[in-house]
Each structure stands twice: as C-alpha cells, then as structure tokens.
Length: 93
Image 1 (cartoon, rainbow, N blue to C red):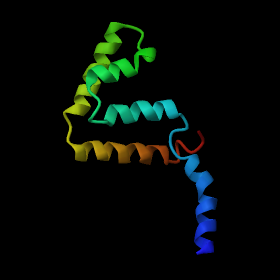
Image 2: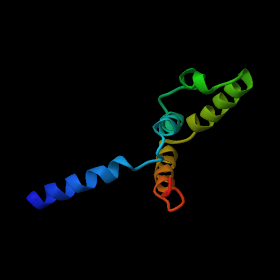
Image 3: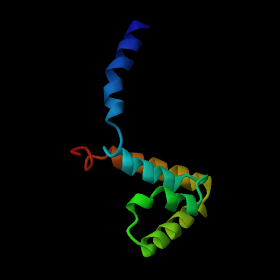
C-alpha cells in the first residue's frame, strides 16, 4: 500500500503539467464543448476576447454547431483534445 501511495505522489506533478499549458484556452474549449452553456452565455463569457459584432456572431454560430451535436460526439471531442495535448507535437510546449 505504501508503494502505491509513493507512486501516486510521484505521478501527481506529471498530471499537473497535462493539458495545453494554457488554462484559459482549456476553459474556452471546455465551454465550447459543454452542452449546458447556451450561445448567448458563451459569447458573454468570452466578451473580453471579442473585438466586434462580427466575431460575436461567428462565435454564436460555432457554439450552435456544438449544441446540435450528440453527447457522444461531444465526449469524443474531449478525447480528441486530450490526445492533441498529449501528442509529441505539443510536448515541447
């Protein structure tokens, strides 16, 4: 049991580095995938990154695309994002 605890503690710092390396990007992607966030709330949450109305309209359309997908597809997108984060091309970042 002590060995398991030691291994878990050794792996903890590695799990802290998992992801894109940019928590803001990860939050935006997760909010994009999240089916409980509607398009209006999505644009409001990203307001600091939106320079004009054309961008806001485009983001609403993108969010609507994700809202029309099944939960299975959204789960697959999450898996895809984790695969990208863990890829050799992202390893140096």
